[in-house]
Structures are given as structure tokens and as C-alpha cells.
Length: 156
Ligand SMILES: [Zn+2]
Ligand SMILES: [Zn+2]
Image (cartoon, rainbow, N blue to C red; front, side, top):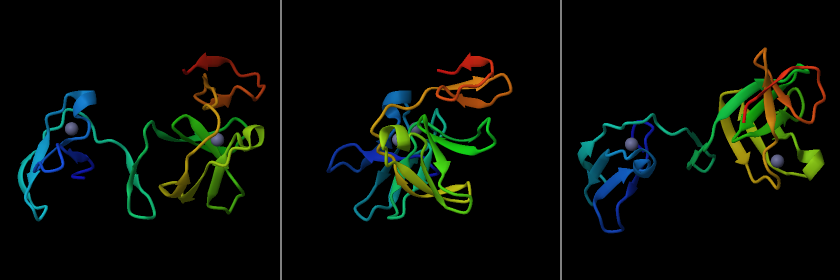
């Protein structure tokens, strides 16, 4: 990982590492490394913005495939949205956020947050499809399960 961009090895014995987004963006950024993993050559002109990563507790970079959003829900609560799934806080002072569909689906997906900035732990295996959300004219997200009087604008 360099400057937030990730590279993957061309082949097992190759010294060339290509941008992990080369297929999606036809990006031609690449680096060469020697046996000691020192960079000997680099072409770092990406034609796209860096993928979004967070660091998991065991030091791995985990990609947030879609996006990470903080949503103020119409009822005044706060939700975190990751890849279209929403999480709500277990309790006011808790660091744990659990899947908003935990009751309907007995889903056990959850995350732990340090403030609202950093995911310190995540279990993102949901046993259901993402809920459908709508964004209201005020820019608020409304769950289709919540019966409200907001006017809906379809988001997806
Ligand atoms: Zn690239
Ligand atoms: Zn879930």
C-alpha cells in the first residue's frame, strides 16, 4: 500500500506490482520491488482516487467496498451505513454498533467504533440483503420500514 493505493503482485515470482484497480479503471500505475521488498521503480500516476480502507485490529487493511456514511435518522438517532447496511448504537456510551436488522433477521453483524472516526472491530457478515433507504427532501435517510410522512425521493 502506497499513499492509500494498493498494489498486487503480477505473478508469484514477478518483481512487478500493479495497481489493484487496474481492471476497474485501466490504471497503469505500478511499482517494482527487489528481493528485500525495496521499491526500485515506481509509476504512481493513478487515474482514480484511492480506495477506502480501514485498518483492522490485526493490522490488516480491509476495504470498505461501498461507502461509510453517518446518517442522522428522522427520529433523532444516529446510524452508520456501511455498504448499504445500517448500524445503530447499542447504547449511548457503548462503542458497539449493531446491525439495524438484528431483530428482523437475527443478524449478528456489528462494528466497534472509536468515536465516529475509526472502525476498531468489524463483523460485516449479514444474513440478509441491505435495507432499502430513501432520502427525504431534507436530505434525511428514511428506512422503508419506518412509516413516516416524509416525501420520498428514491435513492437506489
Ligand atoms: Zn491505480
Ligand atoms: Zn445485518
